[in-house]
Length: 333
Ligand code: ADP
Image 1 (cartoon, protein in one colour):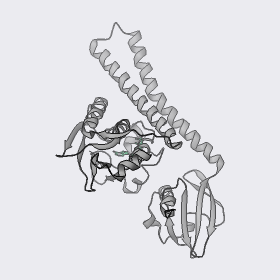
Image 2 (image 1 turned 60 degrees about the vertical axis):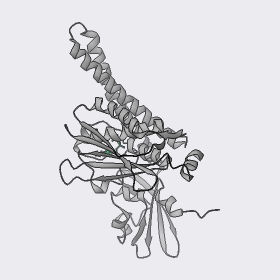
Image 3 (image 1 turned 90 degrees about the vertical axis):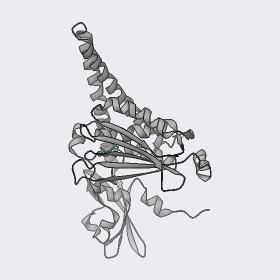
């Protein structure tokens, strides 16, 4: 049997793990633990574990949730494994229900409101008003479709059932189609796309690639200001046999200590636009999951120092010309 990479498994666990030496100094914390405290492993290293966990209790409350702590010792250090206590699962569940209900109710209320107005005042409305109302109904329906698709993806991810139909896909023409949809929803944003010469097709599932681009372009527009530009750049990646797609915006940006959290499910980072915009915190979790299933990677760079400095999300996907191991691995999924 090939050597198992336990560190990678622990790093990507959906539970918090932390290790401290016998002077109680932290020597390791996995990504989940770091995200609970909006920090990273380097920042935690050397700090006292009891600044984060209580010395006399086998539970700890972090961000309103109670975690049970299980401790294991070996000759070098103690490992602490944090799991949500059962009753807290109900809180996670009820938070989820309330987010989703809100996300469903807002567009539905708007659709019903405009449909009612059109039915009751049909004769009094002029063509321009009718067109505007129908436009809003269409936009809100698209929002609902996106939410339902994201919810279906979440349940497929949970039961490991995201069957991919991988083939050679022309990324640029798919992005153009998605851009047209998003442009309609955000007429006050400026959209541009640049494609370098000789970029090959990508190896991807066409529908999933569209879902990825809808989420990323929708976010880029949503977290930007009026007249803000959203730029997509397609090029050969510096990593051989991969295509790079960058989605660049000039919006609110993301604080560096929140960058690690944005890919978690149900996570919305507080900023003055998240308060005003709709969202379920599912988009980036799904995006990352789908990209990794297609043997790709996603990176983000962002800045909040200057106004409008914005964010750039970069995805790398295998080039269709790369028919070796990568394609085989995808076919096996
Ligand atoms: P949401 O439905 O809230 O948009 P996502 O999973 O798509 O959920 O994104 C998670 C969080 O990451 C958002 O709530 C937002 O705070 C932040 N975010 C995502 N994309 C951007 C972006 N382009 N600019 C600024 N913040 C972003």
